[in-house]
Amino acid sequence: MRSAMKRVRKEETIGNNGQCSKKQDESHKKDPFSILPLDLIVEILFKLPAAKSIARLVFVSKLWSSIIRGKDFTKLYLTRSFTRPRLLFVVFLNYMPTQFLQSFSQEDPSSDPHHRVNISPHRCHLWSFSPPVRGLICRQNDTTVIIGNPSTGQFLTLPRVKSRRRGLFSFFGYDPVNDEYKVLCMTVLQVRQRRESRVVAEEHQVFTLGAKQKWRRIECNHDHLPPSFTTKGVCINGVVYYYAWIKSEGSLISFDLISEEFNVIKLPEDIRCLVNYNGKIALASHSKLGALYLWVLEDASKQEWSKISLLVPSWTDLVVDENLYFNVRGTLSTGELIFTPTRPVRPFYFISFDIKENNAKKVVVEGIGDNFPSLEIYFNHVESPMVLSNVS
Image: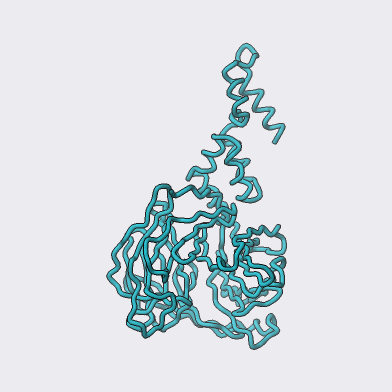
């Protein structure tokens, strides 16, 4: 890189008479990186090992800051990141009041320099996160919502949700048409609800991530209540899907992030586990030693579902504990089905099943540690260089 910088300096600072002009010299002293061609700067940034390194470079110069903060650079970086998906763990420790985020290479976790970000100094602030959306995550603490970028270690607290109620549900997603991240919030009278309860979610509000944004009230014409212990929502192609009760009956709610409209989709079975199955929303049953079926939503407007039944016989060779149940977590970018244990195992592992080849493999993830009472794992996470700007 040094030789490239010297070569560019010589080509760009020598004039026709072979001497450096005073204006150029003053410009280089103020910003020595301005002598580099734009294409070279972008290529340097792309070759850095992690988005965290890129985020630090916003302080190098105004030019570098404008490049890194630009939407074009973020899109290009994400395009590359989608070809290198990662695993993201949210780990809860039992020997200190904290939790941390840690990511690994999805293809080969053992070959990765495990990047860790501590996120909470107090046990009272330990909260679950939403599934990652284009590299960003979202968590809720009472009426406070936080957006985070695990790749840069940056977290941003959104303005407080305007409500006197402490029962709050939040869902996170991305609007691909307007290139916007949005948070959907709704409130209830109490945090914990029962299926038979007549209480429904109210005060539906939306926050669009960006400077000088505020919570906006929107209308919902479908009375429903998301259970506090179920799915956090799955975002696919600009639509957030989540499970909810409508008059004690399980239903699938879809929220279009573009039109900001709600719709109700009738379930073929009352199953709460929602996953992304090859770009489609699916209902997944628990699985024990290979038995599995999925309901896949083929057409949301026509409410058409298809049922897929599978058997993974090779699990008996991979799993020692025959009483261990597994959750279906959807598919990888390669199309392989993923299964994770319903309780913590040490060392942690997951099962990857290739449907076409009828072959399963066990993937062990080293480097998390052994002293964790629980953890959350998300697949197909991508590194994002996005710098979270102040929203106030």
